[in-house]
Each structure stands twice: as structure tokens, then as C-alpha cells.
Length: 492
Image (cartoon, rainbow, N blue to C red; front, side):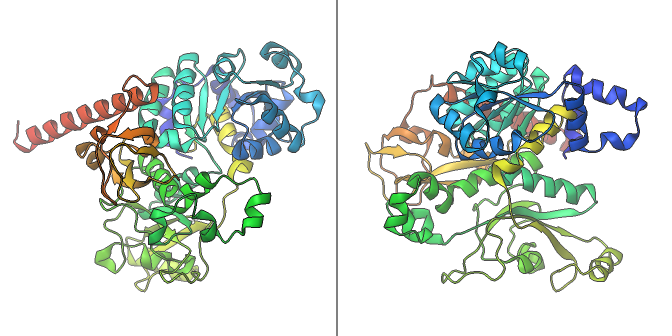
């Protein structure tokens, strides 16, 4: 996956060693991640992993990591170590494997150390890969930069951090000679895989994205109204371990915007200036709906990102929806390829030129080991930002008054709107990842974006400083690029 990116990474010697030994083995032995993991296990040289954040995603990874050859879970860091121990127990880890009292003991005995110090985990001797599964943008940025300093690879489950500053973090990782990777199992990495598949097969990508449950009114949903949209009863909520604000961030469109920003920045696809449209669409209609407007579809342009809804606008369920899955639509460029589509049973649009490939489900943390193996064994990310093309900007859910406190994604005040990055910077839009616990200086009308100068924000905050650095870096690069184009056009 994304093999063209590997040229940019100065990978660790143990990775290069796997390739240098290939001449002594059959080539096929180096084409399979599972086989490579087995070889690392047999050689007593497992990939040593540190997990930061033992929530749902992290727990799902733990469930599979204990039975994956060639992996050694060196440590788990969580602000509440008892929660991490509970997650290990719940996912099948026996007590004897999690009794280490230090990183050194865990490394020596092949066991696991539980701690509350994520930065110490990243600095631990012997660690190969850190996984950030915190969901906290500021924490994710801090951990990624620490990995760059310590020359440790980073798998960024924390798509919130990636949308906020991923293009800069990936650049810093490249400079440090380590891999910065999106997390397989989460939808952005799976979408990147489909885009890479289509392009590597020679197809032009029309659109790529995912499915979700969405109606236009959901943009104004709050933690107080979220459960009625999910159909949960008060009794279910009372007896379940539900986080209303987190669930609402999926419903109000914020999470979709964040994830599509990550996809755009990793693939080169670009969002429409109007953001996501969330068209109702089932899997059989993907080629018809997700083609350019000039060809009869709804896309603003070819080569974009879009999220399809599992609900018709009147609330009826879409037939054969893609609520849990991902897709890519692509085009044939010749009559011959169009005939091939028909001969092999592809569902196409009415012209026969546009087709789709999709994956109906994603397995979240259960699939995360693919990223770990790809990064550790091949030095290759499962998706990584290659530029700053899309941004997710805080947008008012209702008329907001001066002095109100913003409460971030999934809250009562703002949702995240997808925008082209250049448009976001030109309008000085406030990223949704920084719209938490900041006070408004002036009123913001319902549906309007929040600007940097609309809020009181501490500019010496690490996350704010990193984001501002990224904005300045790409603004300067875009300006230089524009000047170069102008000079070339003038014949200078």
C-alpha cells in the first residue's frame, strides 16, 4: 500500500535487513505480512509495540495483538492505568503477561508494562512503533513530535490530530527518518488503500469516501438529542457505556469531515468548496451518483472525497446502504475497458464507463495490526499525508453569543465543516480540533464558520503553535508555487 511513499523514508536497519536477506530466500516469502511476522517470531526479533490509549479502538487492537506472531506489546500507556489493565484482562491477556514493573523488565522478559506516562513509553529502549489511540488532538500532536525526536515510528489512530496537523507531522517524521501512518481498520486508511488500488491499476479516480447515517438536520444535533436519532431508549442509555458527545460527533457530520480531510491530505483528492453533500446512495448506485456533474452525477469535480448517507432525505433507509463501509468510484478511458466492465459483471452507470469498488465493513482496531506490520516490516505507511489539501473548520450549530464557550466536536455549539485547505486559510477558519474550551469574542451566526479572531485562544499552547506553524509553512509554499507558475507563464 502506498509503495511510492517508501522512497521518502530512511527506514531502520532491521527493516532494510529483511530486504537484504531476500536473495537467500524464495521471493514469495517476502510478499506476505503474516509470513514476515512469523519469521520475526522464529528469529526472536518481534516488533515491539507501545499502545497509548486503552479505549475501544485500543482494546480491539489488544484483542488481536495477543495472538499475532511477531508482535511484542512492550507497554500500554493510559491516563488511568487501571483502565488499561482492565482492557488487557477483558481482551484475554493473562496476568502473567502484564506483570512487568518497568520498560526494561518488559523488554527483557517479553512481557508488558502498564504506565500512565506516554512520553516515557515513546522514549523506552527497544520500542519500534508507538500507536496513538487517544482521540485527543493535542495529545496526538505531542506524541507524534516525541516519536520524531526519539526516532520511533508512529501509527496515528487519532484522526482528530491528523486532521489538525497531520501534514506537518508527516513532514517532521520524514525528516526524522521514521514512518507516520494512518491506522488500518479506521476508514481513512481503508479508503486510501482503495484509491491506491484504483490508481495502481491505471484507473482515474472519480471519488472516494465512506458511508454514514446522515440527514441535513443532524448538523444541529447535540448530546441532548443524539439518542433519539440513534433510536436508543433511555433504558439502553442508562445501562450502556455511552458517550453522548462522542456519538454525536459521528451524527452531526464532524467525524465524516475530519476523516475526509485525512483522506484528501493523504491521496491528493480535493474536497468541493461547499464541503460534503452526504447524498443518499446505496452500493449499486455508487457509479451513477458519484460521477462528475457533467456526466450526470453529483460531483463538483473528478478526484474528490464524498460521504454517502444510508438515509433518504425523507428518512427512509437507502436500499443496500454502505453505512459501515468505504468505496472508490473510477472511470474507464476506452471502449475496450468499458466492454471489460460489462463482460465481468461490474455494476456501472448507464454509460458503462463509471464503476465502483467498495468494502462493506471496517473492523476498527481488530485490523490495526496491518498498519503495525506494514510500518514495522516494510517501512510503509497505510496512508500518510502528502500535502495540505483539506481542512475541517468549526461552524456554528445555532446563533452563538459573545462570551459563550465552545465545546468542540460533537458538542452543543459547533460542528466540523470540510473545506479546501487554501479556502480555510484564506478565511482564517478555526480548526474544529481547537474549538474546545475557547471563549467567543463576538457573536457568530448559525451556519457561519468560526474564525481565529472570533475566539480567545492561548497561542503558546503546543497544539495551537504546531497548527500555526503548519499554516505558515504551507502558505509560504503555496505562495512560492504561485510565483513560479506566474514566472513560467510569462516566459521568465
